[in-house]
Amino acid sequence: MATAFEARVLPAAAQAWLREDVPVAPRSYLADVRARLFRNRAGVISLVVLGALLVMCLGAALLSPYDPNVGEVSARLQSIGSPGHILGTDDQGRDMLSRLLWGGQLSLLAGFTPVLIATALGTALGAFAGYAGGPTRSVLMRSLDMFYGLPAILLAIAIAASLGPGLTNVIISVSIVYIAPIARVAESATRRSMVDEYIEAARLSGANTPSIIFTQLLPNIFNPIFVYAAGLVGLSMIIASSLSFLGLGSRPPTPEWGYMLNSLRPEIYVNPGIVLLPGLMIFITSIAFNTLSDALRDSMDIKGS
Image (cartoon, rainbow, N blue to C red; front, side):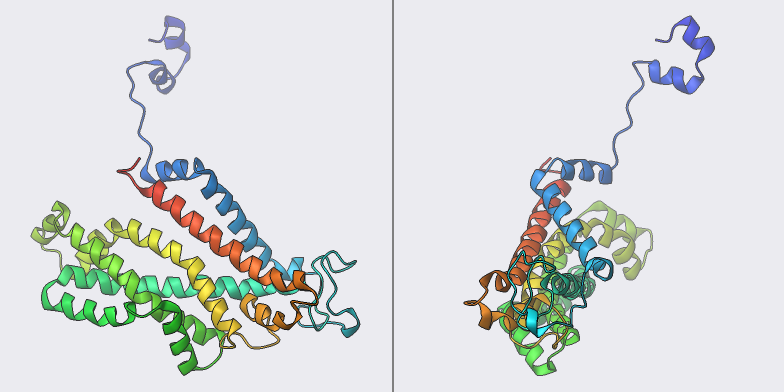
């Protein structure tokens, strides 16, 4: 309780905080998720690593010391730690640090973009199939299962080979690969939500199907789709880098981690350090994405908290 002096001096809002019977406002869901995520050490480390990679790659124009496509033949295959080239040079004398920074832009683009496209299309298809049910659901999901039943990398190779080499075709092929699994997650989450009372209440209020799906259903099935999609970014980047390694991705001299790994492969016995650098970047980035996905899943799991 506030004293007589506090009652005269302090404003009413401050007096309320001094009262022991004033309940503390509960944290919002997003604040709770953020607090649990920051308590996850592995999740915080992966978030810092990804943030640093993103900043360095997006700031390649400012951070790269050399033109990534211009080299000196006299300076070719310099080892890591060489003067003027901290990460060495490739077989054409181009600075590896500059090429890794610029190549990260395309590698991250090939990781994020297919997942965004597949999440939008897969969520729409899965939510519609789960909401419609019956023959519509059966036909739609069985059609998607034809893509889901094939190994992702083989399907991506087949699509990319039929479309031709190029980063745009890589993005299209990886997007097609991930539509089916995301649609399955969305359809499963939709079917679980169909028995909830808010769906029946929306129907009784006279809301039409698109309104129920976009305003009621999608916000409530967002969590599992988001967590699953976050875990696909690392895999998407690995598949895109694999396609570039096979010659189906970006074309020379454009730097991209998968293409760089393939072009440097003949030099593995001459200067193995620089050959391993693109592969190490792919490995670190994919591990960080997978770890962050696991941390997000644990942080967004209300029942498990």
